Length: 231
Image (cartoon, rainbow, N blue to C red; front, side):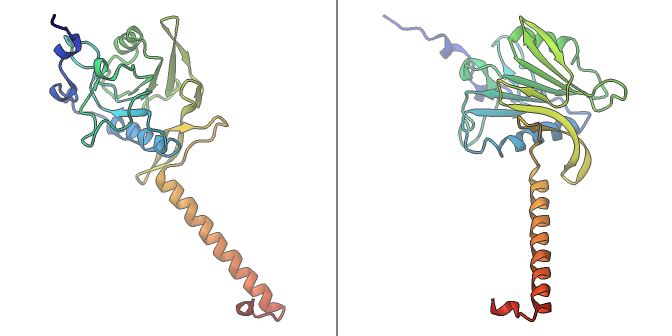
């Protein structure tokens, strides 16, 4: 008797396009998800059960095109798929829905408040995060949580995400030498994780302070008639 495996009939990630090839009209659509991905690798350096995709196609139906958020986070999956990394995110292979979708609003409306939100809710995405850097009067950050199949807004900053164990928010800082409001991950105490360049700057400041304190101590010892070299 022949056995039938329906998954064998579905296209694999290697055979599917990895994005929709739509050029971004706002550089932040690349930079902000890239920063969030880089920051996750700091507190979760030893964890191998998460994946953060940037401008990557998510396939949920073999008969439909992929959806391509600016960024997304999945938990309970392999962090590294193989040496060539994931070409795309295919739900019938991963068997895990992303827990968070991220879209950075551009000057050209892409349905963040309507079609995308409805599509993500239908899929069952727990968190939908929208960042609108061009807003002036309304909050720029919106974090939606799916409750009874409907998204409820939490417009705090930062917003704690208990299922992820991190907070997300926006704050002024410097990334790639650019000072502006960026999006960051936060710990439970509301303290954001520093970027690699910020951590390097803090380390340099600590080293300089230590050198100054050492120099002051040497001068104090010399004023007391003690040669610091002999100590």
